Image (cartoon, rainbow, N blue to C red; front, top):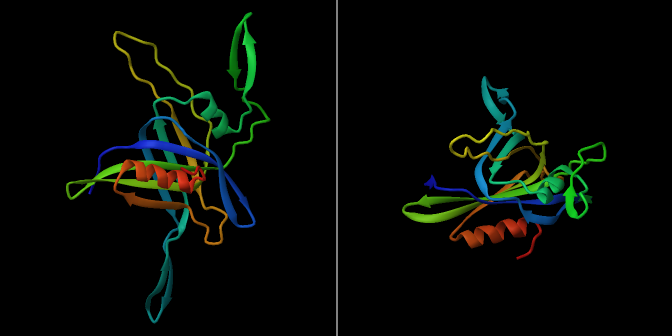
Length: 195
């Protein structure tokens, strides 16, 4: 099987009460360009008995998720960073949305899902991956002046993957489905978006 693409990154606000996790405000983040999830596990933790290893543990510790998208609209930025958008008027008639990065920001925990198309024995399949709890960092600002040709510049987000607050402290769910539509439905259902 080989990965042949990347589609539809979704985010939703994560909430946990008494060991029950819920997601709200689910939305498409943007169009996906590149995605990586680097997982860290604990060092070998071996129990020796009878002069050999009797038990070993390499549990999930945390991870780093990076997603590059075609754009990062203000609504998505506000949700990812916990900013309350404000409507202001510029000049005499231009109404715009303003995001103010200040001490009132409360970066929320989010659920994150993405579709990874792949080919398995000549048949297209769609791997839907959902990370239960992610906290994104403030993205970097950078730009390059335009020369003779356009140099495409795209935003990149980095987040910390954490365990959720359920009894078994899950951190990722995934399923491989026969169509992109079913993979999208899986992600929407996991992130509390219905269908």
